[in-house]
Length: 117
Image (cartoon, rainbow, N blue to C red; front, side):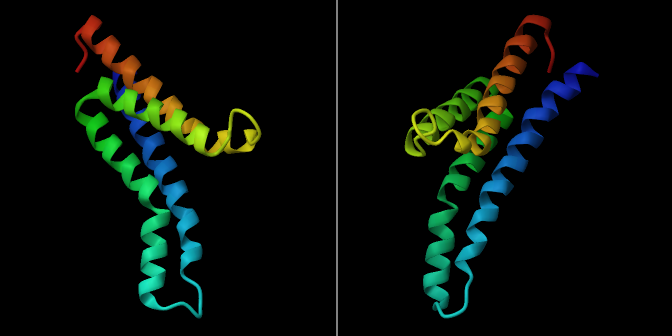
């Protein structure tokens, strides 16, 4: 039972965090802009989400590498959003990625030691 929880919690948390980030791109669809401008805006807003989706696909198969990518994403986002110096509220948005990274690494470590799959 603990194996299934440790397998699925970081995956579900990552999916929910990615969907939460993608929710902020809805503001691109407003009246008065051309369809092309709206699609460019939508694509630009979702580039970090696409990186996170790629990290999730990697983490799904290679837990250690994916966990490290999620932690790296947390650090880079923290620097870009100035989370560590002047914008601590942004930690609420990016902290799920740190948690996911730690859980993926923990699962990889425990599966090697206890022969979990």
